[in-house]
Length: 369
Image 1: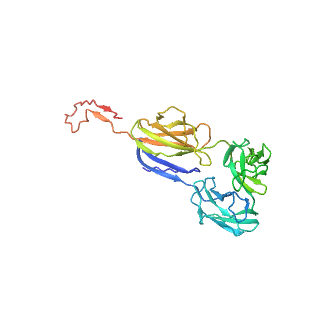
Image 2: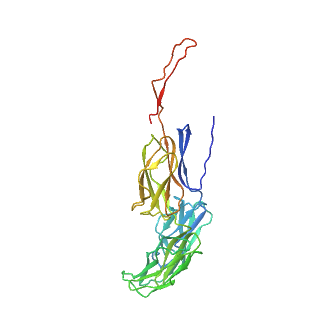
């Protein structure tokens, strides 16, 4: 009388397991698949140039993932200055966020030249070492204007240019400053414009990149002569990719033809909400359907709510699909619980009859569902 089963997944998230006998739910359990041990660690914004005794233009940090490239949250990262006598603004250790990132603000020491910072990652043997270069005080600053955290498929142009802004310390734009854009990671791409640009009358310099063939995280360094440098982070994907996050309860039991509200959020690989993303639904088990017209679109916050009308019995499953992007398979599940049939007239009990006497029964069974 025993039945056994098992489940494994390289994806993360919550799944509901139901045990059904004759389409009736007897027991259910929820399993939360979480990221594994830290295996991959990547430096963010390493190699910056900034004025001595001043805060670097951008925070530095690490991205930590497991063996399946899932970001690891709440992992301890300890940053410490190794040379240059600078300082870290945040108390240590730091904790990675939901994207697997831990960032700190590094103020350089008073000496010129190379300065170093180290990050110790809980669960990993090898630390990450960061380098910065302190330069004498200048009359201006360089900042990222736009183009950070872009996403592009392999061998396709990034959706916008990398742009920097060079200004005086009082905020006035500085023109005719040479800015060199450099791809730091192998396979990151090639420039469709010149990698050497000059700031215009508004203090802006820009360059356009065509993504390379190496899928993953990449960086571009933009250096303004005598004013410092800034980084741009971008990601190359095989195809456009999104993540569908279920926000409403899953694995519910309900009566036949019940209407359940399914709520989800659609984000990009940097966890930014995607507006007007086209979503459709496909029934994969049961006799259920979505009440609204398909396909549907997310709102400005990346949210979408659909009314799921269940079938008349048994397990129900509805798959959520992004029409124009890849993503992990996403399902909503439910079980329809039926009531016992009604017999009319009620079954008689303790009937007395003579031996050999034929007794006839006419019983009508009505499904109350």
